[in-house]
Image (cartoon, rainbow, N blue to C red):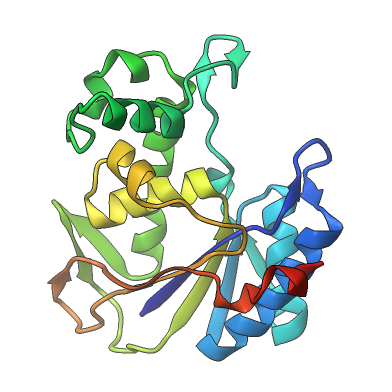
Length: 225
Protein backbone atom coordinates (compact mmCIF):
# COMPACT_ATOMS: atom_id res chain seq x y z
CA UNK A 1 0.00 0.00 0.00
CA UNK A 2 1.06 3.57 -0.67
CA UNK A 3 -0.08 6.56 1.38
CA UNK A 4 0.22 9.94 -0.34
CA UNK A 5 0.41 12.90 2.06
CA UNK A 6 -0.34 16.35 0.63
CA UNK A 7 -0.15 19.75 2.30
CA UNK A 8 -2.82 22.27 1.29
CA UNK A 9 -2.27 25.14 -1.14
CA UNK A 10 -1.62 28.75 -0.16
CA UNK A 11 -4.26 29.60 2.46
CA UNK A 12 -6.32 32.52 3.58
CA UNK A 13 -6.12 31.65 7.27
CA UNK A 14 -8.71 34.22 8.31
CA UNK A 15 -11.37 32.73 6.02
CA UNK A 16 -10.04 29.15 6.31
CA UNK A 17 -9.92 28.65 2.56
CA UNK A 18 -7.47 28.84 -0.32
CA UNK A 19 -6.34 32.04 -1.96
CA UNK A 20 -6.58 32.42 -5.73
CA UNK A 21 -2.95 31.31 -5.92
CA UNK A 22 -3.73 28.42 -3.58
CA UNK A 23 -6.48 27.21 -5.91
CA UNK A 24 -4.03 27.24 -8.82
CA UNK A 25 -1.53 25.31 -6.71
CA UNK A 26 -4.23 22.79 -5.78
CA UNK A 27 -5.04 22.20 -9.44
CA UNK A 28 -1.36 21.74 -10.29
CA UNK A 29 -1.06 19.24 -7.44
CA UNK A 30 -4.19 17.44 -8.65
CA UNK A 31 -2.72 17.05 -12.13
CA UNK A 32 0.50 15.69 -10.63
CA UNK A 33 -1.41 13.25 -8.39
CA UNK A 34 -3.14 11.69 -11.38
CA UNK A 35 0.13 9.79 -11.87
CA UNK A 36 -0.34 7.86 -8.64
CA UNK A 37 -3.50 5.82 -9.32
CA UNK A 38 -5.11 6.94 -6.07
CA UNK A 39 -8.19 4.97 -5.01
CA UNK A 40 -9.35 6.78 -1.86
CA UNK A 41 -9.24 10.40 -0.68
CA UNK A 42 -9.01 11.58 2.93
CA UNK A 43 -8.84 15.14 4.22
CA UNK A 44 -8.60 17.34 7.26
CA UNK A 45 -11.95 19.05 7.92
CA UNK A 46 -10.39 22.51 7.53
CA UNK A 47 -11.41 24.39 4.41
CA UNK A 48 -7.92 24.97 3.02
CA UNK A 49 -7.13 21.25 3.08
CA UNK A 50 -10.58 20.16 1.92
CA UNK A 51 -10.45 22.57 -1.04
CA UNK A 52 -7.10 21.11 -2.05
CA UNK A 53 -8.57 17.61 -1.80
CA UNK A 54 -11.65 18.70 -3.78
CA UNK A 55 -9.49 19.84 -6.69
CA UNK A 56 -8.14 16.30 -6.98
CA UNK A 57 -11.56 14.77 -6.35
CA UNK A 58 -13.05 16.75 -9.24
CA UNK A 59 -10.20 15.90 -11.60
CA UNK A 60 -9.99 12.21 -10.72
CA UNK A 61 -13.71 11.51 -10.50
CA UNK A 62 -13.35 10.07 -6.98
CA UNK A 63 -16.38 11.75 -5.47
CA UNK A 64 -16.05 10.65 -1.84
CA UNK A 65 -13.70 12.63 0.41
CA UNK A 66 -13.48 11.03 3.84
CA UNK A 67 -12.87 13.54 6.61
CA UNK A 68 -10.36 12.77 9.37
CA UNK A 69 -11.13 15.22 12.17
CA UNK A 70 -7.88 14.49 14.02
CA UNK A 71 -5.84 15.79 11.08
CA UNK A 72 -6.84 19.43 11.51
CA UNK A 73 -3.83 21.66 12.06
CA UNK A 74 -2.09 21.50 15.42
CA UNK A 75 -2.20 24.54 17.67
CA UNK A 76 0.59 25.95 19.81
CA UNK A 77 0.76 28.32 22.74
CA UNK A 78 0.09 28.28 26.48
CA UNK A 79 -3.28 28.61 28.16
CA UNK A 80 -5.41 31.16 26.34
CA UNK A 81 -2.39 32.70 24.60
CA UNK A 82 -2.98 30.84 21.34
CA UNK A 83 -0.08 31.28 18.88
CA UNK A 84 1.61 33.77 21.22
CA UNK A 85 4.84 31.82 21.72
CA UNK A 86 5.26 28.07 21.85
CA UNK A 87 6.01 27.60 18.14
CA UNK A 88 7.82 24.22 17.84
CA UNK A 89 9.55 25.16 14.57
CA UNK A 90 10.99 28.35 16.06
CA UNK A 91 12.10 26.45 19.15
CA UNK A 92 14.01 23.71 17.31
CA UNK A 93 15.79 26.37 15.24
CA UNK A 94 16.78 28.18 18.43
CA UNK A 95 17.93 24.92 20.05
CA UNK A 96 20.07 24.06 17.05
CA UNK A 97 21.59 27.53 17.18
CA UNK A 98 22.49 26.90 20.83
CA UNK A 99 23.93 23.48 19.98
CA UNK A 100 21.29 21.59 21.97
CA UNK A 101 19.96 18.09 21.26
CA UNK A 102 16.76 18.14 19.21
CA UNK A 103 16.33 14.40 18.52
CA UNK A 104 15.55 13.56 22.14
CA UNK A 105 12.86 10.83 22.36
CA UNK A 106 11.84 12.33 25.72
CA UNK A 107 10.86 15.67 24.19
CA UNK A 108 7.58 15.64 26.13
CA UNK A 109 9.63 16.40 29.25
CA UNK A 110 11.13 19.61 27.88
CA UNK A 111 9.84 22.73 29.71
CA UNK A 112 8.96 24.20 26.30
CA UNK A 113 6.39 21.45 25.67
CA UNK A 114 4.96 21.38 29.20
CA UNK A 115 1.49 22.94 28.94
CA UNK A 116 1.99 23.74 25.27
CA UNK A 117 -1.15 23.13 23.21
CA UNK A 118 1.09 21.63 20.53
CA UNK A 119 1.88 18.71 22.82
CA UNK A 120 -1.71 17.58 23.33
CA UNK A 121 -2.54 18.10 19.66
CA UNK A 122 0.49 16.12 18.49
CA UNK A 123 -0.33 13.33 20.95
CA UNK A 124 -3.88 13.16 19.56
CA UNK A 125 -2.63 12.93 15.97
CA UNK A 126 -0.22 10.15 16.93
CA UNK A 127 -2.89 8.16 18.77
CA UNK A 128 -5.45 8.49 15.99
CA UNK A 129 -2.84 7.75 13.31
CA UNK A 130 -2.61 4.22 14.68
CA UNK A 131 -6.42 3.92 14.61
CA UNK A 132 -6.51 5.10 10.99
CA UNK A 133 -3.67 2.78 10.00
CA UNK A 134 -5.56 -0.12 11.58
CA UNK A 135 -8.58 0.76 9.43
CA UNK A 136 -6.29 0.50 6.40
CA UNK A 137 -5.10 -2.92 7.52
CA UNK A 138 -1.91 -2.09 9.45
CA UNK A 139 -1.99 -2.81 13.19
CA UNK A 140 0.56 -1.08 15.41
CA UNK A 141 2.79 -3.49 17.36
CA UNK A 142 5.49 -1.71 19.35
CA UNK A 143 7.54 0.29 16.86
CA UNK A 144 6.14 -1.41 13.77
CA UNK A 145 2.95 -2.06 11.80
CA UNK A 146 1.75 -5.57 11.03
CA UNK A 147 0.04 -6.04 7.68
CA UNK A 148 -3.43 -7.53 8.10
CA UNK A 149 -4.71 -6.79 4.59
CA UNK A 150 -4.48 -8.61 1.29
CA UNK A 151 -1.31 -8.25 -0.74
CA UNK A 152 -2.14 -5.21 -2.87
CA UNK A 153 1.14 -3.35 -3.05
CA UNK A 154 -0.03 -0.64 -5.44
CA UNK A 155 -3.28 0.25 -3.64
CA UNK A 156 -2.92 3.97 -3.00
CA UNK A 157 -4.76 6.43 -0.76
CA UNK A 158 -4.25 10.19 -0.43
CA UNK A 159 -4.53 12.38 2.65
CA UNK A 160 -4.74 16.18 2.37
CA UNK A 161 -3.89 18.07 5.54
CA UNK A 162 -1.46 20.55 7.13
CA UNK A 163 2.24 21.00 7.74
CA UNK A 164 1.94 20.47 11.48
CA UNK A 165 -0.50 17.58 11.57
CA UNK A 166 1.30 15.79 8.73
CA UNK A 167 4.61 16.21 10.56
CA UNK A 168 3.01 14.72 13.68
CA UNK A 169 1.66 11.79 11.68
CA UNK A 170 5.03 11.13 10.05
CA UNK A 171 6.68 11.33 13.47
CA UNK A 172 4.50 8.45 14.61
CA UNK A 173 4.80 6.41 11.43
CA UNK A 174 8.59 6.73 11.24
CA UNK A 175 9.40 6.70 14.98
CA UNK A 176 11.21 10.04 14.73
CA UNK A 177 10.84 12.51 17.63
CA UNK A 178 8.40 15.25 16.65
CA UNK A 179 10.78 18.20 17.30
CA UNK A 180 13.50 16.55 15.22
CA UNK A 181 11.12 16.05 12.31
CA UNK A 182 10.08 19.71 12.62
CA UNK A 183 13.72 20.57 12.00
CA UNK A 184 14.22 18.05 9.19
CA UNK A 185 11.05 18.55 7.15
CA UNK A 186 9.52 21.86 6.09
CA UNK A 187 6.61 21.36 3.70
CA UNK A 188 5.90 23.91 1.00
CA UNK A 189 2.31 24.40 -0.08
CA UNK A 190 1.01 21.28 -1.90
CA UNK A 191 4.21 19.36 -1.10
CA UNK A 192 3.70 15.65 -1.80
CA UNK A 193 5.15 12.88 0.37
CA UNK A 194 4.64 9.18 -0.36
CA UNK A 195 4.88 6.46 2.29
CA UNK A 196 5.04 2.83 1.15
CA UNK A 197 3.94 0.01 3.43
CA UNK A 198 5.03 -3.61 3.07
CA UNK A 199 1.97 -5.42 1.71
CA UNK A 200 3.02 -8.97 2.57
CA UNK A 201 0.19 -10.33 4.75
CA UNK A 202 1.33 -11.03 8.30
CA UNK A 203 4.60 -9.12 8.02
CA UNK A 204 5.68 -6.50 10.55
CA UNK A 205 7.16 -3.48 8.89
CA UNK A 206 8.36 0.07 9.26
CA UNK A 207 7.05 2.52 6.66
CA UNK A 208 9.38 3.45 3.80
CA UNK A 209 9.61 7.05 2.56
CA UNK A 210 9.32 6.73 -1.20
CA UNK A 211 9.08 10.48 -1.87
CA UNK A 212 9.57 13.46 0.43
CA UNK A 213 8.07 16.94 -0.03
CA UNK A 214 8.02 16.90 -3.82
CA UNK A 215 6.91 20.16 -5.45
CA UNK A 216 8.00 19.67 -9.06
CA UNK A 217 4.38 20.21 -10.12
CA UNK A 218 4.77 23.84 -9.02
CA UNK A 219 7.25 24.56 -11.80
CA UNK A 220 8.83 27.99 -11.92
CA UNK A 221 7.35 30.71 -9.68
CA UNK A 222 5.72 32.50 -12.61
CA UNK A 223 3.69 29.37 -13.40
CA UNK A 224 1.63 29.97 -10.28
CA UNK A 225 0.94 33.66 -10.85
